[in-house]
Length: 252
Image 1 (spheres, rainbow, N blue to C red):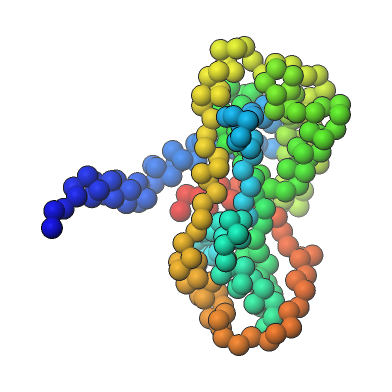
Image 2 (cartoon, rainbow, N blue to C red):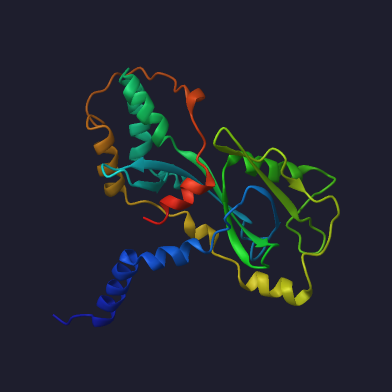
């Protein structure tokens, strides 16, 4: 049998990068870190007419025995069976208050990615955010006073206003700038479009067996006979996943 040395080199590189903390730091540098106050950005369109300008996923946040948090993309986004979703609903069936608390922690939460120009630096960054800010963005685009704010010639810059209340970020004051304007010169626009990050590649399909194993550490009886009546989840006590703790978990 002939050993494929090139394949081994690729595998070695892959494993080395997974262990190298500097690689994680380099990856995180692609993301826009929102600061408290006003963050001015320009949302960029997709690279072509067939590519959506945003990517959508749902994230399960699972805390391991060591306290380290890992993000799992919900497989249901790809219309695939998701053991962590099964664990989430299974925890609500047990009738245990402790299990209800665990269910709230692993609940799949909407997450969105967009390419933006950071007006502070002029760089193209990935903006990762939750459903409340996404509703603000979509609301502006559906408003006839703004329309397609991602249009490079007639779009609008967007002010993301981050206000901390009770330890959690709020974005209620975020809105497009009133005046439409070109995103930049022709040369700047071309450079930005050439620098688009592959945001859709961020929404990966998690390995089923690995996800199943993780789900069973959370609920060992997951595939046993649980009560058939499902209690409707009470999400009133849920706390949002902030940009800070989401990006922090990507370092692992």
